[in-house]
Image (tube, rainbow, N blue to C red; front, side, top):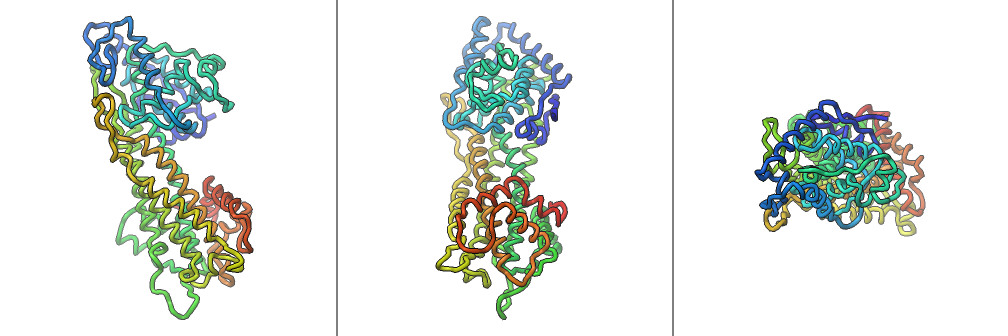
Length: 512
């Protein structure tokens, strides 16, 4: 099994994906263990002094003014975890919780949090055992970190609360730890706070969204090319010299992908009558501009994610010179903004894909295709309601594009009077990405059927390879009406698991 070694300098997005989705094992480097021990020595020295130090010998948040005696400090750390594990609502997905825990472990190993090495080792042991704390949908405001989600994870380290075992059964966390030979953690000064104070949930979801969108943007280029063929459009607008004079990188990549898919097509540039089309509609002609802008948005989001992956997010932090200082690095604004930005780009990509689908189905704009791509229009409804489903998805995505990060709400008796709502931004982006997959699947299903209806004109070899592969999934081509939901589900799976891109690339070579 693949193993990810966590050091002091952060981790990569690939590491996060390997642990969250691939079940990779986690190990601590010797450097990380040494840094953990050194930082802990600083915290222990401060804890022994009479002077109050935030997070070490004081209360938290609006209660930070109370000095806590040594006899109550272990109880203080237990209490912050128990009280902050206040999430509600549906359970969060396993991959999100694993990313959340792994990214918190990454910060612990930086040597800036002051926890003992055994706390970090226990977190690694829980991940390696396949134990997943039960984390709920609601509870994070994205400031002071993802407090409630991280608290539910910390509760599992203490052997309390509920968790899911590797067999998928939810049981008391203490039973699961015992069953895997893991001793519960007895928290000491600062350790409870250090386990809660991070942007790890929103960052984990950003990294996974970027991985999914990299595949989906290529998929959208492929379906846009298929729609262009089906509409007898021109590929001249994809010429590299046109995109070179407006040098947005994503736009050029998207146009190059479409051109690669369309290479050798016998459908492009044809018309069904003697009135030549001077220009294709925006949804066809401007596909690279819209998909390209989304790609460039992803590039910016990836830069933010890489910076956050290299960060140690905690409050207070242990500095190399021995100081333990309060700070505001737990504020999720940098991550929240790009999560919201991506939701806007994703909604627009879905919107332009839906417009192309609608054009394929409208006999007044489809340039000779039958109404709704039906076999016997009037008797058959064809793909009429498939477009309704696509439209419903796009409409929801437009609502999800409303930024969460613009909606701060005060908490903790006005001590935490401005928050990022980054967790909420991440949760709605996950829904938007899920919906985008379905929207692309509907365009794929409609475009492949429409291309097949252009009898006597041969599609590009890459397009034909996609059509053949889609038909092998059980999603049938032109013909009388049939139970449509299974066909759409098959198309969705074909996009979701990456087969669409893989099949096209067997002809085109690697797409950008």
